[in-house]
Length: 172
View 1 (spheres, rainbow, N blue to C red):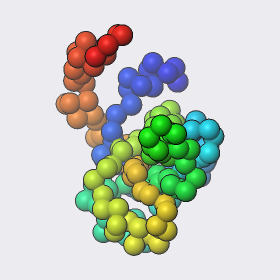
View 2 (cartoon, rainbow, N blue to C red; view 1 turned 90 degrees about the vertical axis):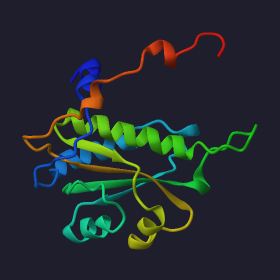
View 3 (tube, one colour; view 1 turned 30 degrees about the vertical axis):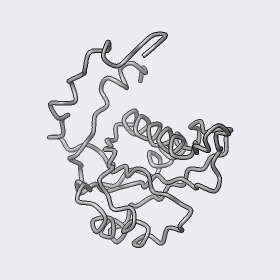
């Protein structure tokens, strides 16, 4: 798919067919994550794939925004493997994980799958339910699957603030 079409047509899918992603599609989405750029190529991302009935039931304890998706991926980062900015100590790992998640969302759409980036989850509960070590930080939950025939973007999807409000040249 052409990039412009991909970024224009992609939307947050909240209604899914009950079937799991094919192994091939799952592999391609994870390969897109693997190719995502990270600070100094440290690759601090850690991805937990949830696609069994038991793991999806556990997920429901951590968020109400699971949308009964047949697959979910929790994108985390290892804070011990992050590039650190020398000026203020800021870690690149959260940004790296966000870039990884974005690659995954775009790859999913390109394959005909749908995805919704969920931030509304309890990180402590997620860590407990899935035995995530302390140095691994959950950042984004991607619920995904093939869109239901009735799936469509929310009205706000097509609403954009004027670019002049968002972009500045030379000075703020």
